Length: 414
Image 1 (cartoon, rainbow, N blue to C red):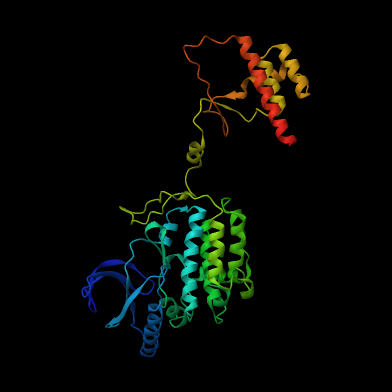
Image 2: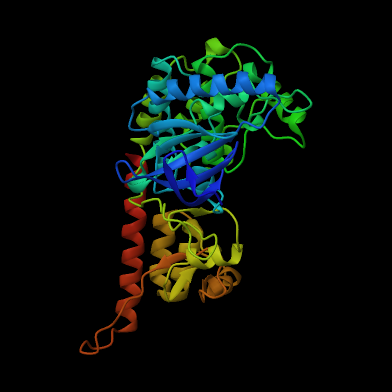
């Protein structure tokens, strides 16, 4: 590992970026810890001059951006064949890592993150800078759920100048807008489309445009209309379906024209949802990948999730207990003959036969064998109280049943 980049003392590697290694370093002039992204300039001479010129031009433009949701760039430089950008050191995690933890974030948190990204992009667009490569790996989530957009300028260099040996433009096909796919001139609405793709993935756990190869993904981007997010995640509100559809509109004129409007709609939608009160864990995982405590599991044992959903009660009603007829069968088991006749008149249904009364007996099941359970409160009897007389308890049961049924009838009548 290198120990010096310009005046910066390299402290260690943070990871592998899209175009080079990312280092943690210290600026000795002001004793500040920074992150340094390196870009390899080991290209053919004609490409190198163009690429280096664009690097400084774009880095300078990105360095002018000063917004709470955009990473701050401090300095640019060159050391041998390596160009570098010194920027704000963020203690957090890439959104891609958070999404890869095996679960979906609560919908209100997903909407909040994307709204913050939209706010940062809106500021950049006002300064005539288009990101061109909006994707989860270019989004950092730091403490308290605050979001920073990274790689302004670098993204533009990659998509505009550097090409692979086959001539394909470098980039992230899953997040490209239709105009990027077709190689047309792009503006801020391309960033909005890419952010819409990211939002769809955060809400559903899958990308809206998929395929076995790049060509298949690009075909989907140009021609396919993805299913509404709430068909894949019922927790997504209807309003979010419309927001996603507008962000992913194929025609530029049908899409959000301004990232500010996109952010405003996202916040309005978020404000209609209950707050989970949970914070995103942005601390680096110790001892390998670990699950976020606030993630909603999308994989795992169905039996385990069913087990967690069971209420802790001593008895529960099976699915065989239904409507007024079941009430009559239960009354026939516990009340006197006169009471059953009176209840049958009130409910205007026939008195249950002996066979149906027998079938009512297994209606109350043990919770360990019951289907999805409806909790039934356990009634504790104080030892100081004398035991209730059977006749009185039967009459009381009938009275309670009648009161409940009358209440239901009044509710539906109103």
